[in-house]
Image (cartoon, rainbow, N blue to C red; front, top):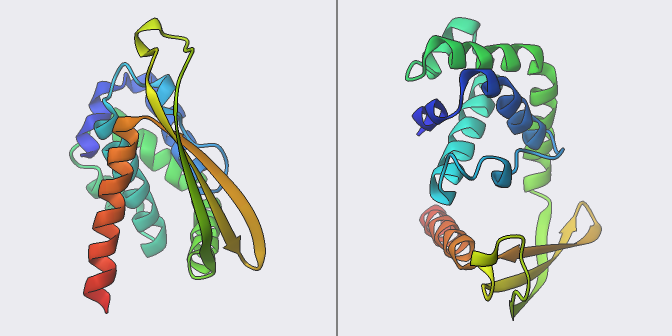
Length: 176
C-alpha cells in the first residue's frame, strides 16, 4: 500500500512524512482533510498504517540506510529518499516514541464509553448537509491518569472503526 504515496507530488512528500513521524511521536499527525482530494478514506488509512508500520519497524530494528531503502523499494527514488532522510534525521525521536508507546500500550485501559447519534445541521460543504454523525466518548485510564477522548465520525469512518475493532478482536481471541 506504500505505492499510494505516488499520488502525492514528490516535493510534498517530505512534509507528509514528517507529519506522520509527528503523529508517531505524540504530536499532531497529518490530517486527511489536507489530502482528501488525493486518497479515499480507505486509501488514506492504508497509507498511514503502512508508513507508520514501516517507519516504526525500521527504527525498532535499527535498520541501516540501505535496509530502509529496501523497505521502500516500491517507490521512486525521490520519495524513498524523502522517507530515508526523515527517518535518519529523527531516528532518536522516533525510537524514544516507540519505547514510550510500548510502555503506554500495556498501561492504557478503557474505563467507560458513551455514544450519541446526531444529524449535522451545517457544514462547509453543502453536499454534506444532513449527514448523520456519531459522537463517541471514551473514558481512558492511562498510567493512573483518567482522561476523556471524544471522537466524531461519519458513517464511513464508523465502518472503518468497526472493521478495525473486529480485526483486533480476532487477534486477541487467537492469543488466548
